[in-house]
Amino acid sequence: MTAISIHGLVKNYGNFRAIDGLDLELRSGQIVGLLGENGCGKTTLLKVLAGALTQYEGEVAIHGHRPGPESKAIVSFLPDASFLPDSATLDACISMYRDFFTDFSEDHARDLIGFFGLESGRKLTTLSKGMREKAQIALAMSRKAKVYLLDEPISGVDPAARDVLLQAIIRDLDPEALILISTHLIHDLEPILDAVAFMRHGKVLLTGEVDDLRSERGLSIDALFREVYR
Ligand SMILES: Nc1ncnc2c1ncn2[C@@H]1O[C@H](COP(=O)(O)OP(=O)(O)OP(=O)(O)O)[C@@H](O)[C@H]1O
Image (tube, rainbow, N blue to C red; front, side):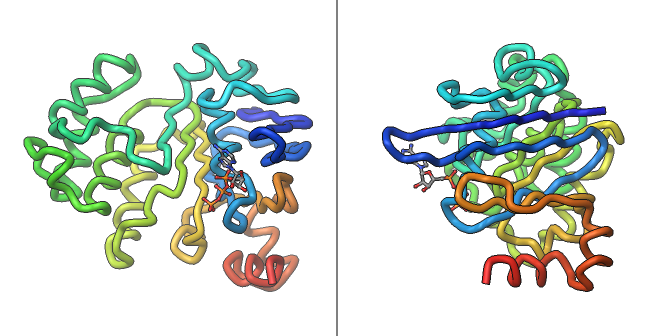
Protein backbone atom coordinates (compact mmCIF):
# COMPACT_ATOMS: atom_id res chain seq x y z
CA MET A 1 0.00 0.00 0.00
CA THR A 2 1.38 3.42 -0.94
CA ALA A 3 2.08 5.49 2.18
CA ILE A 4 3.82 8.48 0.63
CA SER A 5 3.46 9.70 -2.93
CA ILE A 6 5.32 12.77 -4.19
CA HIS A 7 5.34 14.10 -7.77
CA GLY A 8 7.18 17.15 -9.01
CA LEU A 9 7.77 18.67 -5.58
CA VAL A 10 9.40 22.09 -5.73
CA LYS A 11 10.25 24.10 -2.63
CA ASN A 12 11.94 27.48 -2.80
CA TYR A 13 13.34 29.54 0.06
CA GLY A 14 13.18 32.99 -1.55
CA ASN A 15 15.21 32.63 -4.75
CA PHE A 16 16.89 29.45 -3.61
CA ARG A 17 15.45 26.14 -4.85
CA ALA A 18 15.90 23.58 -2.06
CA ILE A 19 13.68 20.87 -3.61
CA ASP A 20 13.83 20.70 -7.38
CA GLY A 21 11.11 18.54 -8.95
CA LEU A 22 11.36 15.60 -6.57
CA ASP A 23 9.44 12.34 -7.18
CA LEU A 24 9.19 9.60 -4.56
CA GLU A 25 6.82 6.71 -3.81
CA LEU A 26 7.13 4.82 -0.55
CA ARG A 27 4.98 1.95 0.57
CA SER A 28 3.84 0.98 4.04
CA GLY A 29 5.62 -1.54 6.20
CA GLN A 30 9.23 -0.53 5.70
CA ILE A 31 12.03 1.49 7.23
CA VAL A 32 13.55 3.83 4.67
CA GLY A 33 16.79 5.75 5.05
CA LEU A 34 16.80 9.25 3.54
CA LEU A 35 20.43 9.87 2.73
CA GLY A 36 22.45 12.62 1.11
CA GLU A 37 25.00 15.36 1.52
CA ASN A 38 24.57 18.40 3.74
CA GLY A 39 22.08 20.80 2.25
CA CYS A 40 20.58 18.39 -0.32
CA GLY A 41 17.08 18.97 1.07
CA LYS A 42 16.36 16.10 3.48
CA THR A 43 15.04 18.28 6.31
CA THR A 44 13.06 20.38 3.86
CA LEU A 45 11.42 17.27 2.41
CA LEU A 46 10.53 15.93 5.86
CA LYS A 47 9.09 19.31 6.86
CA VAL A 48 6.87 19.39 3.78
CA LEU A 49 5.65 15.86 4.55
CA ALA A 50 5.05 16.79 8.18
CA GLY A 51 2.97 19.80 7.17
CA ALA A 52 5.45 22.19 8.78
CA LEU A 53 6.21 23.92 5.43
CA THR A 54 3.05 24.71 3.54
CA GLN A 55 4.36 26.79 0.62
CA TYR A 56 5.45 24.42 -2.14
CA GLU A 57 4.50 23.24 -5.62
CA GLY A 58 3.74 19.69 -6.72
CA GLU A 59 1.68 16.75 -5.54
CA VAL A 60 2.24 15.37 -2.06
CA ALA A 61 0.02 12.70 -0.51
CA ILE A 62 0.29 10.75 2.74
CA HIS A 63 -2.16 7.87 2.71
CA GLY A 64 -4.09 9.95 0.20
CA HIS A 65 -4.08 13.20 2.23
CA ARG A 66 -2.25 16.39 1.37
CA PRO A 67 -0.13 17.49 4.34
CA GLY A 68 -2.59 19.08 6.76
CA PRO A 69 -4.73 18.16 9.77
CA GLU A 70 -5.74 14.73 8.40
CA SER A 71 -2.19 13.70 7.58
CA LYS A 72 -0.84 15.11 10.87
CA ALA A 73 -3.19 12.77 12.74
CA ILE A 74 -1.37 9.76 11.24
CA VAL A 75 2.17 11.17 11.02
CA SER A 76 4.60 11.27 13.93
CA PHE A 77 7.30 13.83 13.15
CA LEU A 78 10.56 14.06 15.04
CA PRO A 79 12.28 17.28 13.90
CA ASP A 80 16.06 17.67 14.07
CA ALA A 81 15.92 20.60 16.45
CA SER A 82 14.50 20.22 19.92
CA PHE A 83 10.81 21.02 19.85
CA LEU A 84 9.97 20.51 23.52
CA PRO A 85 9.81 23.39 26.01
CA ASP A 86 13.13 23.64 27.91
CA SER A 87 11.61 24.25 31.30
CA ALA A 88 9.28 21.21 31.12
CA THR A 89 9.92 17.93 32.89
CA LEU A 90 9.63 14.66 30.99
CA ASP A 91 6.39 14.04 32.91
CA ALA A 92 5.05 17.35 31.56
CA CYS A 93 6.10 16.37 28.01
CA ILE A 94 4.26 13.08 28.37
CA SER A 95 1.13 15.00 29.44
CA MET A 96 1.47 17.28 26.42
CA TYR A 97 1.65 14.33 24.06
CA ARG A 98 -1.31 12.69 25.79
CA ASP A 99 -3.36 15.88 25.31
CA PHE A 100 -2.32 16.43 21.70
CA PHE A 101 -2.33 12.96 20.22
CA THR A 102 -5.15 10.45 20.60
CA ASP A 103 -2.85 7.68 19.29
CA PHE A 104 -0.25 8.28 22.05
CA SER A 105 0.46 5.50 24.53
CA GLU A 106 1.67 6.87 27.86
CA ASP A 107 2.60 3.37 29.04
CA HIS A 108 4.78 2.84 26.00
CA ALA A 109 6.49 6.24 26.48
CA ARG A 110 7.17 5.59 30.19
CA ASP A 111 8.45 2.15 29.36
CA LEU A 112 10.91 3.52 26.78
CA ILE A 113 11.98 6.43 29.00
CA GLY A 114 12.72 3.94 31.78
CA PHE A 115 14.50 1.64 29.32
CA PHE A 116 16.75 4.57 28.30
CA GLY A 117 17.54 5.20 31.97
CA LEU A 118 15.91 8.63 32.05
CA GLU A 119 14.06 9.90 35.12
CA SER A 120 10.71 11.36 34.14
CA GLY A 121 10.81 14.05 36.84
CA ARG A 122 13.87 15.69 35.31
CA LYS A 123 13.66 18.98 33.46
CA LEU A 124 14.81 18.96 29.85
CA THR A 125 17.39 21.67 30.58
CA THR A 126 19.22 19.21 32.81
CA LEU A 127 19.52 16.57 30.08
CA SER A 128 22.49 16.14 27.76
CA LYS A 129 21.95 16.30 23.98
CA GLY A 130 21.92 12.52 23.68
CA MET A 131 19.57 12.10 26.65
CA ARG A 132 17.22 14.64 25.15
CA GLU A 133 17.25 12.84 21.83
CA LYS A 134 16.36 9.61 23.59
CA ALA A 135 13.44 11.34 25.33
CA GLN A 136 12.19 12.80 22.04
CA ILE A 137 12.46 9.43 20.33
CA ALA A 138 10.53 7.79 23.17
CA LEU A 139 7.72 10.32 22.72
CA ALA A 140 7.64 10.21 18.92
CA MET A 141 7.67 6.40 18.80
CA SER A 142 4.90 6.10 21.40
CA ARG A 143 2.30 7.28 18.93
CA LYS A 144 0.57 4.55 16.94
CA ALA A 145 1.19 6.45 13.73
CA LYS A 146 1.03 5.15 10.17
CA VAL A 147 4.07 7.20 9.16
CA TYR A 148 7.06 8.22 11.28
CA LEU A 149 9.30 11.00 9.98
CA LEU A 150 12.55 11.05 11.95
CA ASP A 151 15.08 13.78 11.14
CA GLU A 152 18.59 12.81 12.29
CA PRO A 153 17.19 11.15 15.40
CA ILE A 154 20.40 9.72 16.87
CA SER A 155 23.12 12.20 15.91
CA GLY A 156 23.89 13.05 19.56
CA VAL A 157 23.73 9.51 20.90
CA ASP A 158 27.02 7.80 21.71
CA PRO A 159 28.00 4.95 19.36
CA ALA A 160 27.60 2.25 22.00
CA ALA A 161 24.02 3.30 22.76
CA ARG A 162 22.88 3.72 19.13
CA ASP A 163 22.22 0.06 18.56
CA VAL A 164 20.05 -0.28 21.65
CA LEU A 165 18.23 2.89 20.73
CA LEU A 166 17.54 1.70 17.20
CA GLN A 167 16.22 -1.60 18.48
CA ALA A 168 13.94 0.37 20.82
CA ILE A 169 12.70 2.45 17.88
CA ILE A 170 11.60 -0.61 15.97
CA ARG A 171 10.36 -2.58 18.97
CA ASP A 172 6.57 -2.84 19.00
CA LEU A 173 6.42 -1.14 15.62
CA ASP A 174 3.24 -1.80 13.67
CA PRO A 175 4.41 -3.92 10.68
CA GLU A 176 2.24 -1.74 8.43
CA ALA A 177 3.91 1.51 9.51
CA LEU A 178 6.42 3.42 7.37
CA ILE A 179 9.48 5.00 8.97
CA LEU A 180 11.36 7.57 6.90
CA ILE A 181 14.55 8.43 8.70
CA SER A 182 17.13 10.96 7.57
CA THR A 183 20.66 10.26 8.68
CA HIS A 184 24.36 10.60 8.06
CA LEU A 185 24.99 7.59 10.31
CA ILE A 186 24.45 5.09 7.52
CA HIS A 187 26.68 2.43 8.99
CA ASP A 188 24.68 2.48 12.25
CA LEU A 189 21.30 2.55 10.56
CA GLU A 190 22.01 0.05 7.79
CA PRO A 191 21.05 -3.05 9.84
CA ILE A 192 17.49 -1.80 10.35
CA LEU A 193 16.87 -0.29 6.90
CA ASP A 194 14.68 -2.02 4.32
CA ALA A 195 15.16 0.62 1.62
CA VAL A 196 16.99 3.86 0.93
CA ALA A 197 16.45 7.06 -1.00
CA PHE A 198 19.61 8.96 -1.92
CA MET A 199 19.11 12.68 -2.49
CA ARG A 200 21.20 15.22 -4.35
CA HIS A 201 20.50 18.88 -5.04
CA GLY A 202 16.83 18.65 -4.12
CA LYS A 203 16.11 15.52 -6.18
CA VAL A 204 16.05 11.78 -5.56
CA LEU A 205 19.14 10.32 -7.17
CA LEU A 206 18.59 6.65 -6.40
CA THR A 207 16.07 4.52 -4.52
CA GLY A 208 15.87 0.82 -3.84
CA GLU A 209 15.57 -2.00 -1.39
CA VAL A 210 18.82 -2.41 0.53
CA ASP A 211 19.06 -6.15 -0.20
CA ASP A 212 18.71 -5.53 -3.96
CA LEU A 213 21.21 -2.67 -3.94
CA ARG A 214 23.73 -4.66 -1.93
CA SER A 215 23.53 -7.67 -4.24
CA GLU A 216 23.42 -5.66 -7.49
CA ARG A 217 26.33 -3.42 -6.55
CA GLY A 218 28.26 -5.77 -4.30
CA LEU A 219 28.64 -3.02 -1.73
CA SER A 220 27.21 -2.17 1.64
CA ILE A 221 24.88 0.83 1.61
CA ASP A 222 27.54 2.74 3.53
CA ALA A 223 30.13 1.94 0.84
CA LEU A 224 27.63 2.66 -1.96
CA PHE A 225 26.92 6.07 -0.43
CA ARG A 226 30.63 6.89 -0.39
CA GLU A 227 30.95 5.82 -4.01
CA VAL A 228 27.89 7.73 -5.23
CA TYR A 229 28.90 10.94 -3.49
CA ARG A 230 32.65 10.68 -4.10
N1 LIG B 1 14.77 28.72 6.10
C1 LIG B 1 15.63 28.65 5.09
N2 LIG B 1 15.91 29.74 4.35
C2 LIG B 1 16.78 29.69 3.30
N3 LIG B 1 17.41 28.57 2.91
C3 LIG B 1 17.18 27.45 3.62
C4 LIG B 1 16.30 27.44 4.74
N4 LIG B 1 16.28 26.17 5.22
C5 LIG B 1 17.11 25.44 4.46
N5 LIG B 1 17.66 26.21 3.49
C6 LIG B 1 18.58 25.76 2.44
O1 LIG B 1 17.96 24.71 1.73
C7 LIG B 1 18.90 23.69 1.42
C8 LIG B 1 18.39 22.36 1.97
O2 LIG B 1 18.43 22.42 3.39
P1 LIG B 1 18.01 21.19 4.28
O3 LIG B 1 18.08 21.62 5.70
O4 LIG B 1 16.73 20.66 3.78
O5 LIG B 1 19.17 20.16 3.94
P2 LIG B 1 19.59 18.76 4.61
O6 LIG B 1 19.74 17.79 3.48
O7 LIG B 1 18.64 18.42 5.69
O8 LIG B 1 21.02 19.11 5.20
P3 LIG B 1 21.83 18.50 6.46
O9 LIG B 1 22.25 17.12 6.06
O10 LIG B 1 22.99 19.43 6.58
O11 LIG B 1 20.92 18.54 7.65
C9 LIG B 1 20.23 24.14 2.00
O12 LIG B 1 21.00 24.71 0.96
C10 LIG B 1 19.86 25.17 3.03
O13 LIG B 1 20.87 26.16 3.13
